[in-house]
Length: 87
Image (cartoon, rainbow, N blue to C red):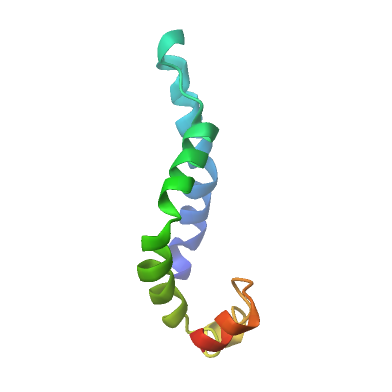
């Protein structure tokens, strides 16, 4: 993992800028507001189906106590009842 962590971090850090730079190829009538699109997609994604299917799988598969010496034990921030269920 250590062998590709730095190239991966560099790639992920520059990716948003590269995607935004593509907007220069769009005509004025076809320009997109990427922030607006991201917010709208987020609103559509976080719904009852997500809460009942995806979120429990995420929480129940968090190896927060043992994984990486427990450094992720309090991540993500969650209310006590949720944290109790996921442990």
